[in-house]
Figure 1 (spheres, helix red, strand yellow):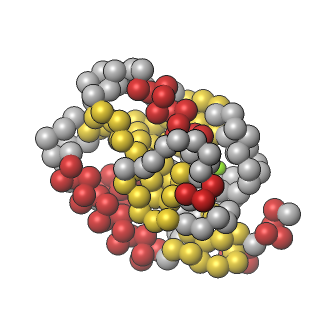
Figure 2 (cartoon, rainbow, N blue to C red):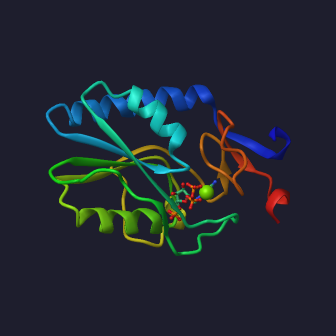
Length: 178
Ligand SMILES: O=P(O)(O)OC[C@H]1O[C@H](OP(=O)(O)OP(=O)(O)O)[C@H](O)[C@@H]1O
Ligand SMILES: Nc1nc2[nH]cnc2c(=O)[nH]1
Ligand SMILES: [Mg+2]
C-alpha cells in the first residue's frame, strides 16, 4: 500500500493539530446552537470521527452516503445517493462534514437538496480544499488544508476503495491509475 504513495502531503501529527484547532473554532461558533454534524460517507468517516471528538459542545450526528467518483479519479458529475439521513433537519444548525471539496459538485448538490428540508442554517466543514479544480459555485466555511491539483488518498480518501486506512494524506503515484 505505502509503495503506491509518491509523497506524504499531510502527516498524522499535522492533521491532528489542525483538526483540534478547527474543532475548537466550531465549538465557539456553535455553543448556543442546535448542532447536527452530518458526515458524507464514505470519504469523511475518519475526519468525522476525529472532528466530533474535538468539539466540546452538544452535537448530534447523522450520516449520508453518496458517490460520484466510482472507481476512477474523475467525477462522473452525477451524485448518487446511497444512504439518506435518518432524521429530520427541521430547525437544526447543520454542519456538513466532508473529506474534500474538489469540483464542488457533490456538496453543491447536497446543500441544495438538504436546504429544502428546513434547517435553521447550513455550513460546510472540509478536511481538504482543492480550489484549482472548482466547477460548482460553493465555498467551505471551515477548511483544514488547501491541497494542490493532485489526486490525494488516505485518512478516508480512496482510489478504487483502497488507501482509506492510511493515517496520513498522500499523493498517489500516477502509475497506479494511468
Ligand atoms: O467536489 P467533488 O468533485 O464532487 O469531489 C468530492 C467528493 O468526492 C469524494 O467522494 P466519492 O464520490 O469518491 O465517494 P466516497 O466518499 O465514497 O469515496 C469525496 O469524498 C467527496 O465527497
Ligand atoms: N481520493 C480522492 N477522492 C477525491 N474526490 C475528489 N477529489 C479527490 C481526490 O483528490 N482524492
Ligand atoms: Mg471516493
